[in-house]
Image (cartoon, rainbow, N blue to C red; front, side):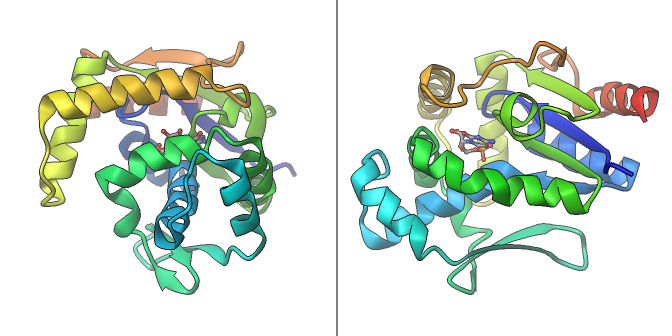
Length: 223
Ligand code: C5P
C-alpha cells in the first residue's frame, strides 16, 4: 500500500514545524522538517566560506556533502553534517537567510528532491516546507497551506528565538521574514505557492491548540 503523506507548506514562521510535529505525533506518522535540510546545506556554505547565492560556489559542495537525517528516541529529527549533529547550529538567525538563498538554486533543489521523497517512500509522513504539495509530494493525500500575518509570524519567531536563548529584535525579524517571503515566493524554481488542491489555514487568530485541532480534523477526515 502507498504510504500516507500530509504536506504542509507556507511562509516562514506560520507555525508549520510546531504544528506539523504535533500532527505527526497525533497521527503516528514521521515528521519531516525539510527546512532543516536546506539549513544544513547553508551551514556547509558557512563552514567553507561559500557564497550561498552563487551556484558556482555551492554546486561543487553538493558532490561531497555528507548529509544525514536521523531520529532520536524522542522522535526528534536530527541533522548530521560530516558526522556531526548540527541540529542546534542550523537554527541560528544568520542561517535562516542563507538557507533561503541556497534554496533558490536549482542545483540544490534537484539534489535534495530525492532525499526528501525517500522519506515518504519509507514512512507515513507529515512533511513541511515550501514546495511539498507542489513539487516534492504532489500525490500527498492531504495538503495544507498554512499562513498567518507577517507581524504574527515575526512575534512567534521572536518568542522561539528567545526560548533558545538567542537575541531577537522584533523589527529585524519582521524585516527578515518579509525578505524571505519575497525570496521564497519569487524564485524561479519551486516558488512558495499554494497547491491548487491544498486546504488554506490562516492561523493569525488561532492559538496553537486551535490550529492543531483544525489540522487533526482535516487529517482524520482524509485518512
Ligand atoms: O522552514 P525553514 O524556515 O526552516 O526553512 C528555511 C529556508 O529553506 C526557507 O526560507 C526556504 O527558503 C527554504 N525551504 C525551501 N523549501 C522547503 C523548505 C525550506 O525552499 N521545502
